[in-house]
Amino acid sequence: MTEMMPQMTPPTTTSPKKLFIKTYGCQMNVYDSDRMADALAPHGYAPTQDMAEADLVLLNTCHIREKASEKVFSELGRLKELQNEKRAAGSDLMIGVAGCVAQAEGEEIARRAPMVDMVFGPQAYHRLPDMLARAESQRHMHPSLKRAVVDTDFPQEDKFAHLPAARKEVTISRGLTAFLTVQEGCDKFCSFCVVPYTRGAEVSRPVEQVVGEARRLAEAGVKEITLLGQNVNAYHGVDGKGRSVGLGELAYLLAEIPGLERLRYTTSHPRDMDAALIAAHRDLDLLMPYLHLPVQSGSDRILKAMNRKHTAADYLALIDTIKAARPDMALSGDFIVGFPGETEQDFEDTLAIIRQVGYASAYSFKYSTRPGTPGAALGDQVDEAVKTERLARLQELVTSLTNQFHASMVGRTLPVLIERVGRMPGQVGGRSPYLQAVHLEGGAELIGAIHPVEIIGVSTNSLSGRLARAAAA
Ligand code: SAH
Ligand code: SF4
Ligand code: F3S
Image (cartoon, rainbow, N blue to C red; front, top):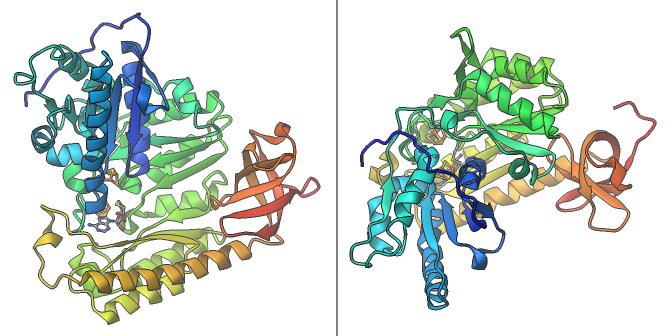
């Protein structure tokens, strides 16, 4: 594919066409989907929640595990039917495949699914209006002459600088909290992972771009921002003076923004938890005491084979340092079971580290062989049945730890960002610093601010509490 200048087609003023975006995968895809909607808004596309009325459907895909990738082709099968129905009724449906499967499989998707109009990777989103114009110009061609527009180039230019600034309406539709991508891509090359191939090399957005976007979000009423990156704590943005600024220093800058009350970041790599970031946790109340810090395995042998470049002991020592700086810190993690060569003993080492850290929550996955990664070439693949059994044991342990963590909140007063009216009349709901859903009796006037809430009960997925008016927050 040829490299194009990011040119924009002229905005249209005719009645809006409808855009439906289906998002798979991680929060970065959620953020990207909003940016794609922003990029298409000046070109006459308004978002819809109803796929059936869409003129354009974009699938924002995930390649992380085989199951995630397969979903794309079954969804395309369903879309083909919708496209046929629409054509029979005299209208049409354009289909675009974006995201990490598009980046990894590019032309292969265009070949396997000829009804797709566009295939483009995460680094091409700022070129979307132009791609769409090219795809639209082919709409009335004979099917044998039509070619999907494929763009999986990694650009020279700064994608974010060429995307329109986050629009208030789109961003605010998610309420008082927002995502903000600060870093993309990964240079770590864990041997199981496709991300370095689908997202490309690590790139950080400049400090002023990030602070500017955070400021606009806060001005629009956002109270809590989650900074995103595949390796968010590898962030090293350039500031106005040409200096490199890490995530810790960035947090101090964001803490100055009026109206912004909470800051989170995800996903971090243990090797990038530097002293400045840990100091920020010690100093900044707005930095939430809840850290997603995946370790993947508790076995040094497996960690080595995974190319994680740290040991279980390194990780545990790091957690101690973080907790010394911020004693109320709770942790969540990611685990892979059944990495090639994983023995029962390796797996038990993983259970042991989970117990030792006492995670508040954890995501766990069966190892999925990804084409093109070094892990795919390893012998000694673990049986599917063994993976299933280990996953169940791991999840049982994590569930019991999560329940203990929730139960330990009872009797405590937590600051809760009240976000919405509750399911029951007379109730409101929000989130604790630990992302727990909390509901309590109260009126809609509580919505939009952080209130002290005394936790009085626990159920499987939420905490119940009452407003602690007297308690100082
Ligand atoms: N950058 C993050 C992880 C991004 S992917 C980090 O380094 O921690 C999210 C999670 O998916 C990973 O933490 C890992 O647990 C899981 N994952 C990635 N590749 C996988 C694979 N091939 N099979 C199973 N799980 C995988
Ligand atoms: Fe994947 Fe490892 Fe990079 Fe995380 S650090 S995105 S797991 S390669
Ligand atoms: Fe999936 Fe790509 Fe995110 S592979 S997890 S959507 S970075």
